[in-house]
Image (cartoon, rainbow, N blue to C red; front, side, top):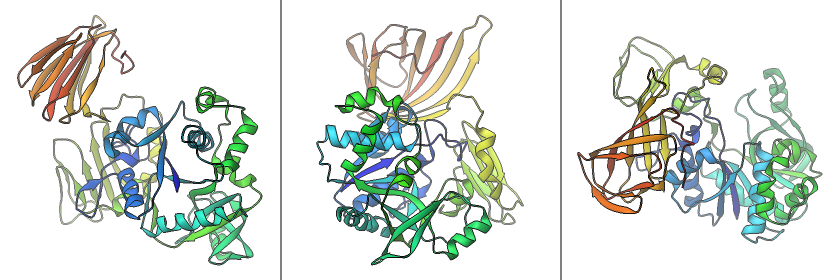
Length: 441
């Protein structure tokens, strides 16, 4: 089985924990069976493996998420990097071309596409095998997974099966309805409609033919180079709704989109994380606190309170669904980022009268990991080792560093550090342009 996991998102709906580099699928807020906290991407990746499915898994994502994915799933995970954000059709097209041209898969091979962040039970993954079987019959262009609705939601698209279109336990699809109002949703459910889960199955050759109608290419590299010429459109609109024959496999198990604080807190184990206190008079209130200072809630009801280095949210749970529009125009650098080697958080940013700025960050590097060998053109750095030890490389010279050492790194100095033990460094950047893009290899 060949699976493409779509990892996108702009990090707005679960602000202030999520940001442009740490989308909702990377937040470690859910407990696994061992009682350890895990993210949505770790959960679904692990569920695929635990389901006993032998699958080649490729993750389609943007540059800003690579470090988070490799940090949480390991350096060996197969990633297709989208050159720019262009919706689900181009992302799936590029990933399919990667499988066809770089992995030499057959046009007859079945591809399954899944979002990376649904909250589902193990039966969800059993359905993937059923979808693969339907595609292999060669009767249907595409097979979808439909979720049995539990209420008339306005958030999801609906799949309407043919009235007498049963194929055993599965269905032939008649039409689609995109995010109806509540009254229309009730009518659709009465007609036997299902929620569209965003899970697709098709033969590789079917999609490659569609892509080549838009853009002629002979190699994956050529398609990647001309990626911007692909239509910026969803896979549903460009492929699914134009297909001549579509089947649907129903799913009756647990399925949630944990895309708002209201739905996410329903799955949390306990009503707070971090340094927090909620009194006994408070009702249905959750606190998530990433800061080192306490948050206390007294006598409140139906609130979600979230504190991070990027900001503080206090919201009625139902109202949290409207959060995206309020943070859409926030223009600030992420104050916390996860990297392949560890993570960092911004402690201070100051601009002085002469136009020079200083940016202070706390870097944490896992034992055995290293920061890439690089240099800066517009800023100097001062590193102070506050915990652990490591091996520093400066312009080809190697030396060991330990607690208490201060390292001055001038602009143009090629440098790297490898952690012998878990390593904590306080970094001060000084310059007139302090951007993460000021990095050369």
